[in-house]
Figure 1 (cartoon, rainbow, N blue to C red):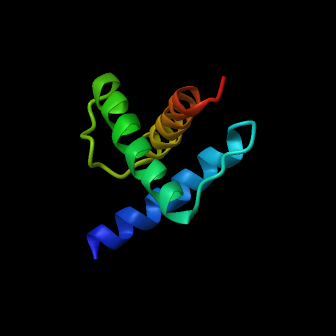
Figure 2 (figure 1 turned 135 degrees about the horizontal axis):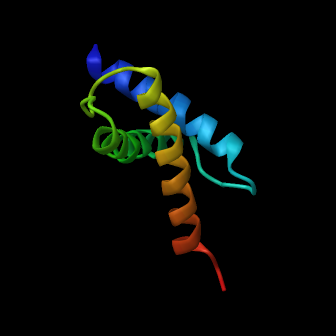
Length: 84
């Protein structure tokens, strides 16, 4: 059940990140979920460095960090896949 919850939360984080990031991101629901999961790892790692929480803790700072991490991953992915 924990994996399903993690994937669902990753989907929500990915959707929020895509809504906040300007421009059009053409990706499906699975890639949005992957974006949210990777963003959660990146954001959770950064939050764990700054605060005394663990990466796997579920709290408000972790959610905000996950969204910021997902936006950062989306930005880097946009730079990498940008056509010149």
